[in-house]
Image (cartoon, rainbow, N blue to C red; front, side, top):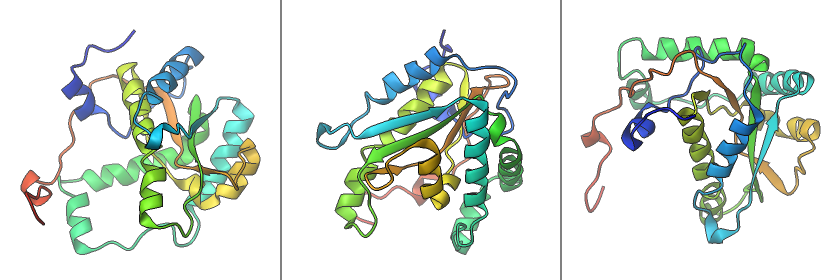
Length: 216
């Protein structure tokens, strides 16, 4: 069963969910498989379909993966340097970053409790690659992951794009049997039913600040 959402509502209310993940309710395997089926309908460079989804539901594996993710989150140099403009945009609405930091801290503590942890991957690595190669590789996995998130939202599930595993990618690859030399992890998404389904569009910077016609 899917939620009664228009396409515009689905696109504007698929949020990064942290506090409202229901850690006590199992997620049926069939729902996750449906999300993957829709994810792989996304565009992919030259139709190579290099995507893979590692879905971790075993409690022991989830705990080990969450520990490796936390170690990555705490690695030196993970947080980027922020410009004043970045800070202004991040805090576009009163208190929004306080909620983001609270949600991040909450997820840090409870990641292992999510019923499913999804690690999307793509064949090929981009270290030292030219921008055109990087764009082609990431462009072959990011649309699929966003489609997965949209499909999850339509089914009453919440997700959140996180990248702590990338700072500890080799260990995560060993843990999950991912061939590190040939396959690159893109993210880690906790997946759970949401506590309520009444999500709203987020406050964003004005269109005039990001839209450019004909030239910058």
